[in-house]
Image (cartoon, rainbow, N blue to C red):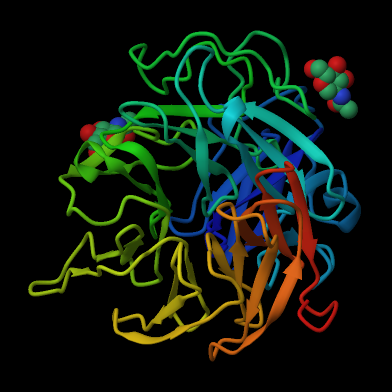
Length: 422
Ligand SMILES: *[C@@H]1O[C@H](CO)[C@@H](O)[C@H](O)[C@H]1NC(C)=O
Ligand SMILES: *[C@@H]1O[C@H](CO)[C@@H](O)[C@H](O)[C@H]1NC(C)=O
């Protein structure tokens, strides 16, 4: 349950009854004619309307330039308030208010509203009859989620787009996007894995956009690189690594393996890609640059290694399953220190907006059900009691910490400023 740092790479505008539209993105002016939906890629300055036109086209030929015009649409990460009567990018991109929680034994992943706690959607991670047991989820740079099915042999990954960000694929003949809006998943009975791109078979949920067989088994590692592609590995089948092309369903080659290599005997558990593009993967810990400069180091470590998280300075933190220890490494892979975090066992960790570290403990022993809180210098502040079996922790856009509690199937939300320990 790692949340990639949110980087605004594109934005979406959706107008329900617009014939043409001009808008400003940074220093660029984009004019769209007779299209209702625009996505705009900030890296390439390319806008795309392919496959996106829905509903009616009006023929009034009006150019939309006023606040009132813009209020007719839905905008993501743009506003007309910084300067009125024009659209501009928000000065800071707002992450979506969603958290994704795998329900491992049911082959489901649930999308939860972090502001209200409401369940917004429930999705199958594999077709009926296929192995699943999803455990790790990773949000990509566009806010969509990738989930690894660790019981599949070889492993599979599934990609679920956001209806809110126009990432779902209108595959059936019914108008609009058919997708789960609550606790009931839509059906999925055939794999489609041999049926060609994007392999989702007959998944009825049109926000399930990719389903890909990878080379590893026990697949748990999913991390997003700078190009929004996904590195995948696992602890079985040679811990092989695959780079899966990311992006929306209509991105060329998306959902397919574009690079693959043998494993290192290290890594394949949860992990992350740091801002320099270096992969950190647990159990035992691997630090690997997939695009190495000549002579670049490949680091392997033999300590008990479980959850990984990264702070704003690029230090990487690694919990140990046993022994009340979390290690802090600088971005170069050198250990800075090992710190107690409040309990003998630990699983996931996350760093909050204050660069404090939160550690889930734990699935292994139920004598304590808590999340440990450390300052960035390793000082243990205290433990916050949560539901039974906390395994994963995450931070939402409001800076609150979420804990997924395995045994009682609950989520706990911690206010970091709420008490002595949080
Ligand atoms: C949720 O989905 C169900 C089943 O597709 C549909 O009947 C219902 O109208 C939807 N509810 C909302 C609020 O969209
Ligand atoms: C898709 O990508 C492949 C590989 O880079 C390339 O050969 C092909 O021309 C691309 N197709 C389109 C439609 O861009």
